[in-house]
Length: 384
Image 1: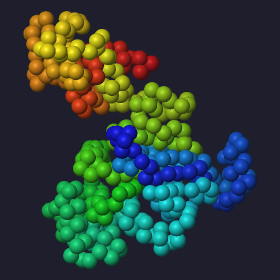
Image 2 (image 1 turned 180 degrees about the vertical axis):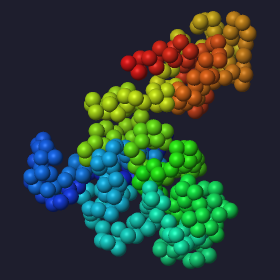
Image 3 (image 1 turned 90 degrees about the vertical axis):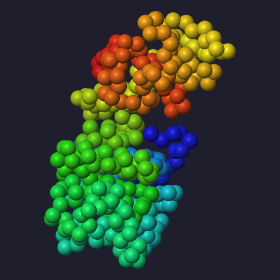
Image 4 (image 1 turned 60 degrees about the horizontal axis):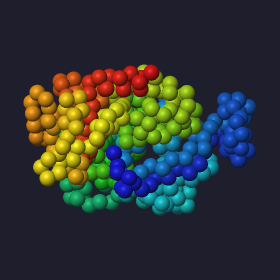
């Protein structure tokens, strides 16, 4: 998750509309005033694929656009790279309006600032894995020796360093998608667009590809716009999720916020069957200690909290705890939970510990504690 100080807008979608089968300000005006899109489609043959969408996509985040078939998510992605033009509104990429770019300038933007990974792999069957991975660089005019070196590095990073000479038909579906991802990575773009990139894969391979994407993002942050219809996938990889339905943006926020503060009944229905433990983090259920117990001159003067004393220094950094049964325990001897840990990943640790577990932020400061009883009660509250 990005820190607030790191947030800036990489892509800005400003009141964008996209109509197919015709386009007019009159149709948009009718839709703005509540006209039924299906009725207008029957009457005029015009389909509103994207309706008045406003979004700011932050630099360095994995931004997931999620919705069922026909929700407008793939159309929105094509608006982001200028493959189709909006009927109204504008898209800004790194502050530059796509509407104001000439076709050559738009092609240059796609070549150097964006790369796309497709659901269908989109590999050339007559080319080797190495040649496929180097194709984007070839189109960009990169010299052969340089593009081969960069393509090999990208293929090694996705685990295909030993498959350079094979043809796509000799690879599994998961390996073919890794070639597609390597082709995008070889360009080293700041923006990566992924259209249902993993949806054609078997479930286990799909999870492997999600892990790979998260690993790559941890190594080097790119702005990733990821299209999916799978809510579990959206929750697992997305820093933020934009929910779309019928061409409209229902809500855009973190998975936790969408679960906890749904903006409408439609959003609530999306999350109805979600495993709450896979969405919530320890931050959502942590219980502050009654008082921060400061270590002063070697005498922390702690107060008891369920027979356990939690000790911090003057900066609230966690030092250790004193229990009635075991006495003093240094922080290095204690199981702790890090801020941002998913509840599902914390359950076992909480259940195995007789004392409430300390939750620490990135600076090892005590945020509060979590007990097994508190964890269960909190989850029941969120699930109700």
